[in-house]
Length: 414
View (cartoon, rainbow, N blue to C red):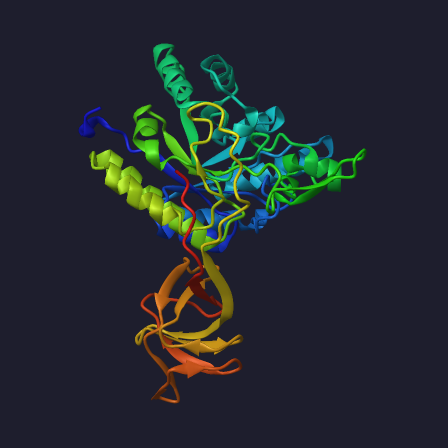
């Protein structure tokens, strides 16, 4: 496809809390998706109070971005009134679309005049299903996770041929559920915490001891996992996926920390822009993949895009860095570019790499080059002291400071 005719797809990043939201926006996401407390499929994320929706949307709209409310949990009879109230608040806040699949939510969102995007929880995997959903007001569909690349291409061609107006959205990076999109009852059965209500305790990623009754043999399964799937990574074939004509690309990760959201969003922002300009080369893909390997991952997989993933479980998680709390920002002197930091866990030394995150401060790292106490340059500060540190970007009072160091080479998956 000639570069001039390519439509740049929308890059959608996860926003589990304010820090992730601001970081995703700062790193180039076109839009963010988020949940509300109590009715989120990522219930262990920070999420937002429904009263915060107006502030969230004012923030993203002021920066030319879009915001989508994920309301894709299983909804019980007793919750219908609550859902209707949340949708009313979403409409007043200016939410750009609601991501859902429960037909009651689809109907109520439409009654509020909200755009509706079909969640992957609906497992829509063919054009005829999408045709039916468009009759209910669906304008975009997040395809079923088990769709292959050939499926995506075929569905897109069918939509165009049959003049069915429905944008396609696909996942391009992040965790994959071993039972496909949360259709698992292990957590609910074992602890009463349902994956379909955003409360999965991820028993599949724990170590289990299996004992044979007859011979009393014992076997330890995995190293922190039983069935844990590798993380989806589409960089190797991103150009083929985008060539299919998908309208939006989504990053999974509403329970991940802001530095993860920032790193992954930054990589895919550059990769998509390269594809759009016709400059996404094999060398760039390799370099971007190496960057992603420096973030938390369970090893990389192409997911279902080329058929059922091989029986190749992850190693339970690769953490290539150490993140340790140091202290917080007390004051920031914008003219000087200096922050007064209270050190809660020392020592803090010249040369350390620090990570800063905050409710309104995008996650970012820097190396400590200068520190002062009482206008005297120092090289080390102990816990319980305060120190002035030059920081190359704006920060805010109450922002948290972490020491950031690489512990081992990130594991790469062929």
